[in-house]
Image (cartoon, rainbow, N blue to C red; front, side, top):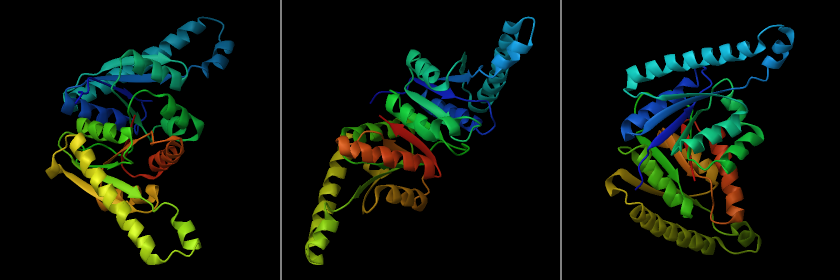
Length: 294
């Protein structure tokens, strides 16, 4: 199983976004990965100010970048004191999305960590079309941090659909949290159950189809656990029927999960569209952190 070598944590230097950096430091400390912190400044608002200045407009931009770098150094010193991790620091200017992906590719990052409640990241990452652009264009697993980190992850939820991304998600879950308990969840629906009822198929036959689907899912879960080389004692397998998003969020609450690991690719084009919808819904509605695997 490949190791985590480089983690890139993005921060807008707001107090809530600091949680992302702290979580990234916890993960780095637990995996011996190198941590880099980046702040991307949008200097477009300075254009109007430049027009009002008659002297040294370039100095204004440099002063701002220097102030941001100083703030990043202060944050890095706190991170080192708390977690024993010394982050590399990067300050960039430009559009958030392309700059972030460019720096992640240059590193190259094995994990990209973002805060969900910063002054800009919630707007840029979780809302609107940028979220879809980031998820679709990113070649890196993305950890979206929603909660203040107090300890390493202890209870993971990994929803799976038995596509190739399911195995990658399970392996990544163990890399991120080597000592956590993992619940592997598959949610199924009886194919065409509504049409079967409409056609007058009796409940006993539909229940028979449910049992078959349930048993097949259990067998696939066991095979997936074996393929991922997970310790049986630390892994719980669950099969549920119903709406995928709803069952994921219910299980998160029931098991008090602090991280959901979810893939972004389904088994085929139709399921990829569905999983995209599920992923976006879970990103928005889940209480804990979300790790979007490849």
